[in-house]
Image (cartoon, rainbow, N blue to C red; front, side, top):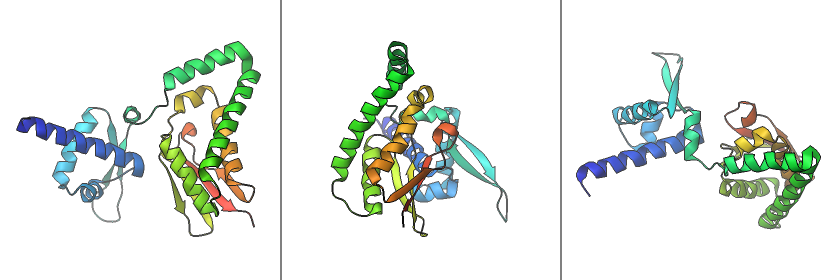
Length: 218
């Protein structure tokens, strides 16, 4: 392999890693990105500018107490192609076909069957795991394997955040709101009656993530 090809492959790998990190973390400045990749600020800027030319990233300026505003870099919707899509075109086509064949009531019945199957799979994976946080972390593992890039954060006040940073079924959910409604019910069932869960930020409503607040009922 030529030296030029090696450099090109390295740049491609770094840019994909930057895209993945921005997906995970949201807005980041050059200094923070540099520390993550052990690269100079100039090198990071070159990668970001190349990604910007491809329409994959953009930035917004954030005012700081001292000095000039800082650029916070974020992904554009065009970057979604680097993440699992859940066979979106096929899913949308099937949903529309099911609506036509069975109507909304029939579609709801099919979604209930899907939800029950997922519930059984999730409960089998979680098993006899005890404790809300432990069950939630198991749920995050399942959802991450399905492409949702899920994680759990302890708020330090007795509550936990369950965060999904990517939605592989967004296009399907846009034409079938029951998918998201069923997911909230699924989480409540899997986590148990001792847990209260509510959705705050919501990707389908324009949020960057889907964020659920989870508390143990006292």
